[in-house]
Image (cartoon, rainbow, N blue to C red; front, side):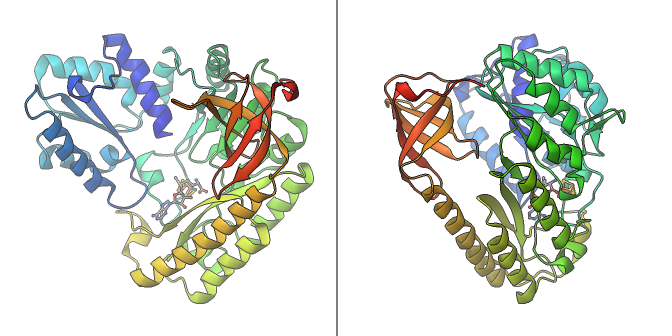
Length: 430
Ligand code: SAM
Ligand code: SF4
């Protein structure tokens, strides 16, 4: 979502003649768009400011803006601690950035803009063209969270659940597709909680997108297990452009830990969702997020997580050691041993990596459908992704970005597939 927000910030500031530059020292303004989800996020910002200070030592100081969730969480504290910072802007206020920059240019006074104004934000953004021209483009449809998992900072930094108006989402997608996007990834902290005026759900958006000519693939992330409603699951049966990979974080395989985390779903329920998904689409694969070392996690709890992984066989996942986030209920709990946590993370990641490698191995000598995203620099090779989002690097005699092609897989490693494409097996576009 930060990538989406960053692109929107570029779209907005182009209205006051500020443009992206790859030459850092030439910048008049530096924006650090920050994430607060784990570990020392705030300290990383100050480290980065140290680097910026060095870069601009002998040239004019740029306007320094901290945006995103660290700005929201730390607010005025940042300006007090580091006078090099000129402005902090929360994730729900960045639509005001052009006015704020103009104000700063006039008055040279420090600015703190951390109101939750999500409705206002999308009202402004709907009138500013999203000029991304990437083959795979993001569209934010939902923000915030009402679930309050005990470890998570999102409800405090992104605010309560908000769903963007349905028409805005369809318009933005249509524009992106007319700009050349072939894949749309719908975004939300709780994307499947999308509910606009009790009339439109995530399934309504997927069905509408499925009808857009020239759009080839649809994905959405991140989903919460308890919002996997039947109408959404049915989309895997009815919408051929919806890709058969679902990122469905479970965090732990132990019901005791899930309860302590306030996850509002248990192990059995999670398995029942996966079973329904498999009925709807046979080739569906699942990826997930795991937290190890949550306060109170015993060897037995950890083994339940390993068992869950063995049972489901996730093809790609993210795993983290629990990181206490200021202000969350879990942040005051007694931490498990650091060494033990590191051992568990290593063990869990090695099981996950084995699954990933074994899954990749299954593609050897087979053809698989790849959406070509770009040509690699200085090489006659292309980069794309399979339906299950596995990166593929391949040689091709003739193909262009945005094509769906059948690549013959000739080798693999844990993360990537490698192959070759010959033009006589081009896939018919969806
Ligand atoms: N809303 C999604 C869900 O509940 O399934 C997850 C979105 S959260 C922004 C992304 C991931 O960050 C979580 O699934 C979790 O694994 C991880 N995460 C969040 N807070 C964390 C913390 N305090 N320590 C470690 N990992 C954390
Ligand atoms: Fe955070 Fe996801 Fe839980 Fe919401 S549902 S509090 S975003 S982990």
